[in-house]
Image (cartoon, rainbow over all chains, first blue to last red):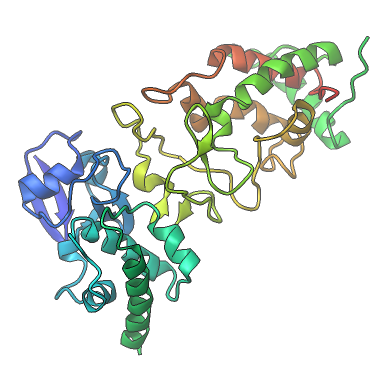
Length: 155
Length: 200
């Protein structure tokens, strides 16, 4: 058995240590907010946080997550109220929505490391998250809004 | 005889080279170094092989002239345009180890892996791309431009884990143009014969 800490909860799973973490999260633990896109770290749909970093869970082995802190979109905030989540909702960012849990997880890292990102910062940070609906303009708008919400929330 | 100029920028490095070689030549039986003997012809000839390897995609792709790594056997700019960052490990949600795992990911064109995957840091970019043999040779032995490596560290660098990973690049990528053993022999020969730079 392998123990994983996902969203600050311990899970005992019976899985091959070489299994992609994405499978463990979705198919064993049952947290399906994280999506499968390409399977080869090219699209960003499967982005989760491993010790706070935006790793691609489709190519991350379960063994890499043992003893580490895994956070999925379900655990990003207690009430879906992370500034990025609020901003995504406010700006009506998603079209089909499939990529957006990954988009938000990447945006959350950007907002943590750069509280007031420029357009260039956003483009650099989000370049690994593809949206086939082409919602990039709204993603950028939402991240600016999230930065504002984050700043207000910190007051 | 071709006229060849010495590359070692500081007398200190040359002294260090000689001291290290003479101090090390008898103690390392598993990996004996050829005795230090200045030989500009042999040195430049050996650097020819070193240069072929360092300019191959497996080495050069992570020593780009810009701040975006290169990718593939044609050394195109890395898709998604990940950036070097201050420490060479990427920025924000685009850090190298977010995709590059501890080991190669199975499958063609999947991310190659290494626990220490990174570019040179922003303040020591150690560019290979676009360098002539002479420029690269001069750069490699200049501690101000080679990551503050003295001769001992340069020799050790041939066996660095990330250097070795060039010979284990994952599926679908060509290997450097010679074996690691042949590269290391050329590297040591170049250094041990005086680290001379080619004329051009």
